[in-house]
Structure formats: C-alpha cells, structure tokens
Length: 236
Image 1 (cartoon, one colour):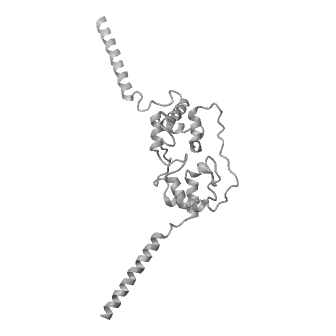
Image 2 (tube, rainbow, N blue to C red; image 1 turned 90 degrees about the horizontal axis):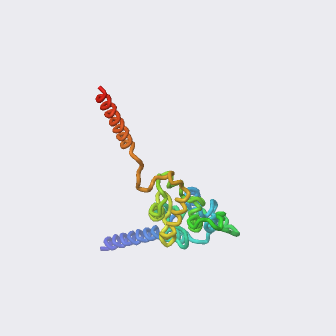
Image 3 (cartoon, rainbow, N blue to C red; image 1 turned 135 degrees about the vertical axis):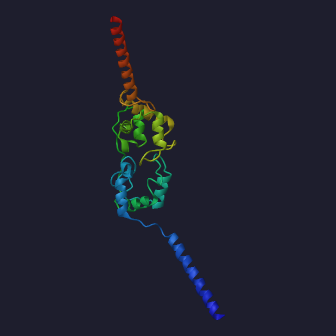
C-alpha cells in the first residue's frame, strides 16, 4: 500500500512538472535574431518606404522604435492610415520579429521630413495619387507602367484594380479604404497616358494570326494563278 502511494505521488509530480514545462515553453516569446532581421530588411519592401536604415523616407522612421514586436505585427497585418497590407505568406511573423530586433538597435533620428517627389502643382491627378498612396516608393513618379508593358497588358482600370486587390509577387495589398476604385481609375488613366497607342495590345485582344496571314497570301496566289491560267486558255 505504501509502495503504491509513493508510485502515485511520483507520477503526479512528473505530470505537474511536465505541465509546467509545457506552459513555460508556450509562454516563452519567439526568439529574436537581429542578424536575420538585418538581412530581411535589406530584401523586403519595408525599406522602400521607411528608408535603408529605418531613418524614414516616404513613411515615418522605424530605427530606434519604441513599439513592441507584437505592435509591429499588428500594424503589418491590419495597418493604420495609408500603409498597405502584408499577408503572412509575404512577410511572416518571425521576419517581422527579427526586423524589429534589428531596427531597435539603430539610433532613432532626431528629426524627420517626408521625401519630396518634386511634382508640379498641375501634375495629373493619377500621378499625384501615386505619391499620396506611397506607390512612388517602389515605382517612382511614372508608376508601374513598365510592368504592364513587359507583360503586354494595357493599364486599364480593371488591370490596376486586379494588381491592387490581388497583387503579384511581393507587392502588398491595397484595400478600397486605402485606394478606392475611383482613385484606381485615375491612376490607370495616368499610366495609359504614358503609353503610345501602338505600344501595347488591347487587354484581352490579339493581333492578326500568322497562320491567317499565310492562308490569305496562299489564297491570293492561287487566285492569281487561276486567273492567269484562264487567260492563257482563252487566248489559245
């Protein structure tokens, strides 16, 4: 009886210790790696807006931030103001944590002023939106017109909205609260104004088929040959 009681007490103690160990492991914050964060910062799009050393550029500085890593994650996933949304498949929580660990080791700038795009006062509304919505950080004041040209697409409103709402590659997502459909239309209008009419095909359209041209030439040749043969036959 006494042996059974001791065995029961030992098992109970092991279970308690195991539970405490699990709780501590779950409660432990994720490991932070400033070196990994520095590497990610150099590759991520974050520096395009916030500056190469987090000193601020098209958006406020992050060097020496007094925000916590959790607050950074919240801002990236459900951002305030004009910052776009970065999903976890583009920037993971661990990447944010590591960047936070790196940026907080840097000195916070004493002052900050937003970058100046140098637009004229009468610049097209779509171009002004490229600056206001921070698109200029990655695409410059001309916007992503080169990307559309490389893909053989016309920068229509539909094409611009598709890229904003379901972006390709590493581009973050802009919701309607950040860039409305109407604003997307003005941006598309500005992008299209930079493209010569013959430079891009109409979206969804296609040029003449090579096979079609070949058949047309062959048919014309046969027709001419037939007419020539008929003419010779009549003369004879």
